[in-house]
Image 1: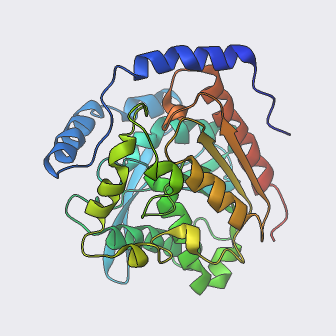
Image 2: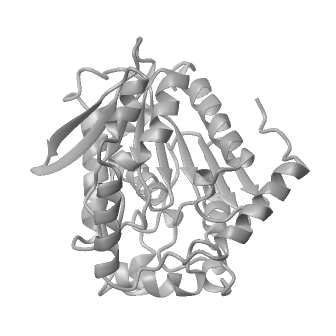
Length: 321
């Protein structure tokens, strides 16, 4: 099921949407006040959000699990029929905004198309918590899901999915799981959208010009430093904090997407090259696409998400590795 060639009409539509994006403010991490305001607005916009699930006959369970004394909230959506696999989902938001509920629309589509249960991690945010603690939340959720405590999902294949900062947390979690080989072997694949894999900034981040869309490209290196205070660049490059420099042996196959207009494009291309030395990696750089493109109302975004669901279906129906 190869990813179909991108049609000229899809590129034209994306260019037209980019004209609207150019008028929008860029996402910046320059203080701790703005993320808190955005987070409050996000939660207000989500009031009554469970009605969308109810229209499809589904509900979301909020469960708080504990691993090594740390409580981690999870949002779980189950299909109506037999569960074929599990998607462990890490939301985006630059580590400073977002929550598990914001992925409901994507997770609903996966639940219906793939007969999977989605487990979305409501990790703490970096406005008041170090990134290392966020990573511990995500690793704790993975250990709970893949270990003996989660009897409901025992033996089912697991696909890890992450977007942007969530893709960073997904990759970091997989690298950390190398300490638990039996758990890691249950992970059948990873789907990663335009992640941040070098917290010192890859070349495409460091050379990003003022014309970047959605993200404030020129300010990204300083933003990454603000998120990792007290660390030198050498320390920031240490895996799993910067997954790009990790040991990928034992990791599962991966599907990756990034836009050619994304300042983070080198992050995806570089990690795909290194990961691909030890496992099957399929990577797509999409023309005229900016960071966050899977949220845009375009045919290309819809096709990328549909292809991702096909890829997940293929992985969960394969024999265990």
